[in-house]
Length: 324
View (cartoon, rainbow, N blue to C red):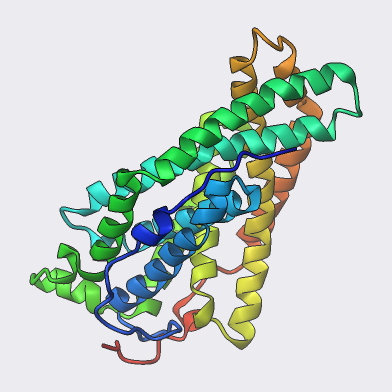
């Protein structure tokens, strides 16, 4: 299926400000939290910028990757929220949320279109339906490309980068603020992962009773947990690396099933907007058998995750003193 092409010169203009300090290439257990946050946040902001041109050209894979990078960045802000909480964070968060919403509509349509194609079998009525879906996708992409070429996007990149480097959070002088910035990464990570995992498993036990909205929130929490564990990969070694991979395996299995359930729910919503042109469009996204199968898979993954031992400080080897 053809994708719209839009020229872009925005990347050349939307560059983050010059960074003040060189940072280590890898995380370490005793690294101070402010340094760790900058490393992780820089990494994912750079990944967002790297996929900008491809997304503007209508490349579905670039769109997928820019959304992953943006979610990683937002997850890092949540993960280090006690450290980076300041008066600017809400404004930064609002703009990142805006960008995510711009990207989300086109991605949802890509997924829905792929589903329709997979089930078409060359049927003429489905081919006609695809035309309506593709028209909607093309219009959504035009709006996305416009957003990515806008002054608002350029300000977002500049503001976010400047905040990561030297936001008010980085110079607060209270004893608590200084303690949080200097806290060893492994200590903070152990506490944060334990808190999120406890909440995740508690909600997961009620998975089959959750409505679409609550299931969506569970998926987001699962994603935050997954992305945080991925971002901390440098800290794991030997047996703890095996444990990390095992936990990630179950998180990703649950994420895949919950993601497909969410795609179906979004597909139904999008299909409703095509109702006049294609009255039967939403039917293909209503499949009780498929829903039950996906719920079983997610529940199984959570049961295995529940049996696994939670991350402990020894897994992240917090043996070193906080580094500058």
